[in-house]
Amino acid sequence: MQLPLFPGYGNHDVQNDCIFGSCGYAVFELCRRTPPPGAPNVDPLSHNYSWDWGKYHMVQLNVWAGDTQAGINNSYSPAVHDTHASGLPWLTLDLASK
Image (cartoon, rainbow, N blue to C red; front, top):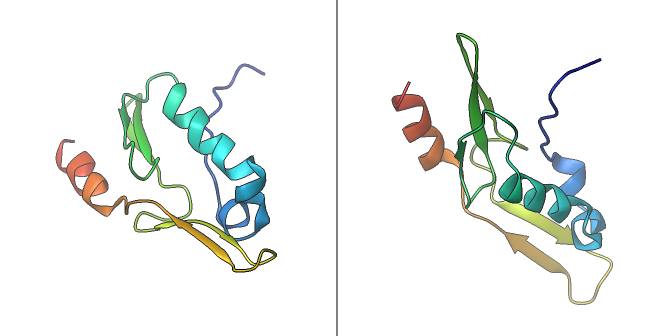
């Protein structure tokens, strides 16, 4: 099957130790280094991205557009919390440009 791959992360990638074990950050880095073909609009702050697929404008918002949680790790003492910027400003500009 010849289908494009559009990576994204979800809550299970960032709301547990997975993010600090590099599985969540690996998706962040993959999207930053090699955005999917035809996805020219990548937000480097939230890791959200968009692309046009024929007449449709597609948007990958990962967990959700306003998410800022990049990771929670409660197995360390003290607990570690990592964040990134909200994607809402980027989404507003992306949709306004269409």
